[in-house]
Image 1 (cartoon, rainbow, N blue to C red):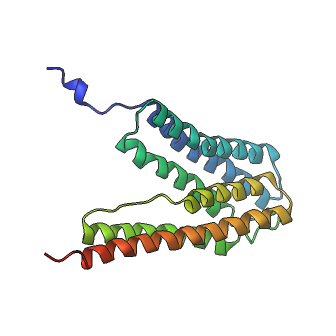
Image 2 (cartoon, rainbow, N blue to C red; image 1 turned 90 degrees about the horizontal axis):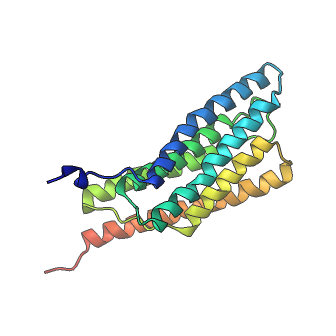
Length: 205
């Protein structure tokens, strides 16, 4: 009997996701070099553009690996685990590095309150999922459209900073991302509370 037939396959979609994850440190290095240049009074536009290109490529290929997994019927547990890691690593690294109020040369920049909002939401979701899993034995995550849209606007906000776009449009992206992030936060918390309530007040035998 060929035991290789029972080993999980590294699908094409998963390979794309792995490449996306590998692109995150490249983005971080390019952006750090650019920011170091700004601190020295040097605006090295090539590093900024390269960081933007890498960020955009990693962000856009999120749709590609999802399409490949569905169209080829190759949705795997590994892919489900790695895909959000790629998204969060890219978003959080961009948000944290571009939250630089002490660097006037970086305009516009991500405000501290927005970065804190995104990080605190993710921390609450992780803690909430852990709590629900411990008490209910399983976590049923219902993807919310607001959460997906929040991710899109978060990425658009970071791209606008890397482009060095106008402040007015930046504030629009930022405001939309903040509202959607807060909305998705509330919806996920409500979902978790309902799952806990179902366990505690389940049907009596």
